[in-house]
Length: 425
Ligand SMILES: CC(=O)SCCNC(=O)CCNC(=O)[C@H](O)C(C)(C)COP(=O)(O)OP(=O)(O)OC[C@H]1O[C@@H](n2cnc3c(N)ncnc32)[C@H](O)[C@@H]1OP(=O)(O)O
Ligand SMILES: O=C([O-])CC(=O)C(=O)O
Image (cartoon, rainbow, N blue to C red; front, side, top):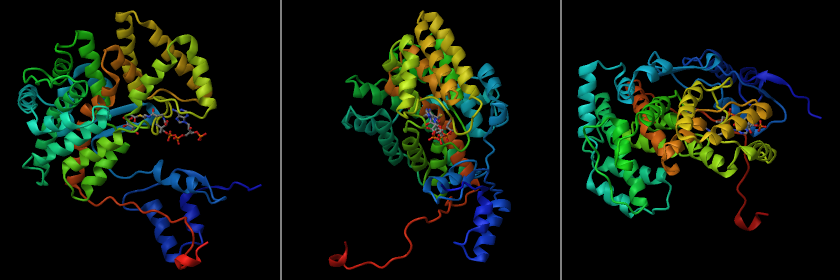
């Protein structure tokens, strides 16, 4: 039996015979005292030499860069955007104010907010060519893929798309914030055989979205709950989609390319796609009586339960707790308590079996269902909010740019000659 030797990565590198002495010293120094203060917390077994073990240190507990946009304090379950605690933001702000905060760096005063909303309202339209493109795309394709194609096309109609200044990027960020709801709702409407809706300049971000989707403004409760969900989804450090955007623009590619990379990354069920997947799971379970058994059987099959677990939060995701309060309000107002019972049972089972808490996607998937929003729109709606965080990071990256290019460590076959085709086994 192989004896497991637990030791920090840096020590492993220092002792590895696979590097020359100067390289070993440089790598050890980079790991422990490097300019970017990289410190690897992960411990792993040196033997057997296993790809999973060697890859994990690069993806966990690894500070990949600095940011002044949001702070995740996982130990205390706290999250703040530019110094403002999310509790304070959801209690006191509209999503338009939070969007301004993320894009410009501080909360707006009344006249700044009025000017921002006026600009956003004036930019909600998209070129007719983008709507025509949406008409031609396969209606059965995922809404994330349809919207990704439309955003890529939108870039081509922006005469500023090749300007690389923070000022231009902020202007593009405001336009994308304004235009994404139009693209998302109309992508859905066209895929359902409906005609596109025209955005309204006089409504705020949330009310305009509901107006375009349903033809009326949301009730007070739905409006408040949707506003909170948009604030909770807006920003979260170097999450996968934001990191993808930063990598893309670090090559000095354009802001739209960064956003398109981010959309493709958000789509996956281990990231933003989990809000749709978790609601599909609730529908599949169907009733509280089946919930416990369903979870146990799924876990026995080694299936992941969508909407649970988080790379950062190991003691719970505060955003999930906030969102759940609104699920409770909506469930009570609709008399649909079985959804809450089912969610509670799944949470209990996951805690008992795996020690895992729900993440933000679990209650928000259900929240959107209770608002009668079609499921294929949940991840695009996440995007409608996260566009603000993505753009803030893209601007931050541009202002301090250095190409993001991590190193990899080769673990494949040692060097070998190429045999002529006729001699290969
Ligand atoms: C807005 C957001 O993007 S929040 C995240 C949304 N994604 C989801 O909800 C998808 C479900 N959750 C997951 O897949 C994971 O919890 C992640 C990817 C979000 C985070 O993963 P990490 O904390 O890094 O854990 P990792 O993927 O390494 O898994 C560690 C162990 O926990 C298990 N695990 C983690 N999450 C889950 C889950 N939701 N269901 C079942 N098992 C899980 C894994 O199977 C693994 O077990 P193993 O060691 O026996 O193989
Ligand atoms: O941070 C992450 O890994 C996932 C994410 O985007 C979030 O939780 O909002």
